[in-house]
Length: 242
Image (cartoon, rainbow, N blue to C red; front, top):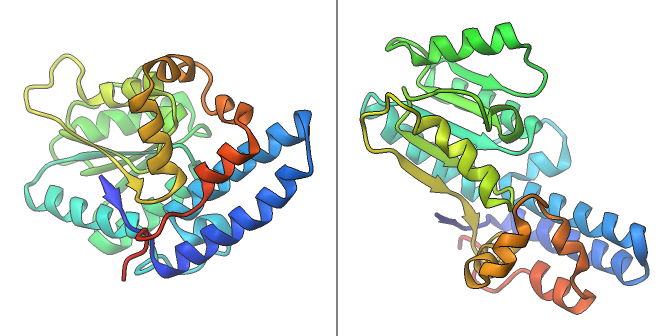
C-alpha cells in the first residue's frame, strides 16, 4: 500500500539525504558502508513518523501518512470484530504504535519485542488467541517473526519493510499456521517517491537481486555506487500529501 509523506516528513527526508550524501561522498570502505546503512535506517524512520527519527516523544497524530493509513485499517478491523498483527523492524516504533493505538481505540494492544521473556511471550500469545483477548498485536519483526501461532488474526500489516522477503514471509506466516480458517489480508506499507518505493521496485524487477537480498538484509545497498545511491535516496516529486 502506497502512503504519502506529510510536508514535515518530506522536509526531514530531504535534510537527511543532503546531510548523509555529503558524508557518503567523502568516505570509503567500512565507514562508507556504515553511513549507507545509517542513511537507509534514518530515511525509513522518517517514513514511519517524524517522532521516530527525532526520538523526542512528541505527539503522533496528523504527522505521518503511514500512521493515518494504519488508523484507517485498524478502524475497519475493529468494526468487523477481527484481529490484526502489526509488524515493525523497530522496537522503539513498536512501543510508539502501541501507545498511540491503545489511546486512540481505548482497547488493549499487545506488544512483543526482543526484551520480552519466554513465559511472558507465551502468555501474551495465548491471551491474543482467545476470543476476548486484545484485537491488536504489535510485534518487532525479529522477536515475532518465527515460532509463534497467531491464527486469531486475519489481518497482517508490515508497517515498515525489512528488505528480506524470506524474513517478511516468515512473519506473515504467524497468521497462516494450521488452524487458520479465514482469508488473511496482508498489507505492506511503502511511502511513495521514497527509498521504500524504489527498493520495492528494484526487488520486484530483478529476481536475481531478490535472491541476493535473502539472508543479507540491507547489506547489498552498501555496494551501490554513490550516483545510484543518490538516485535511490532522493525524494521524488509528488511524494507529499497536498
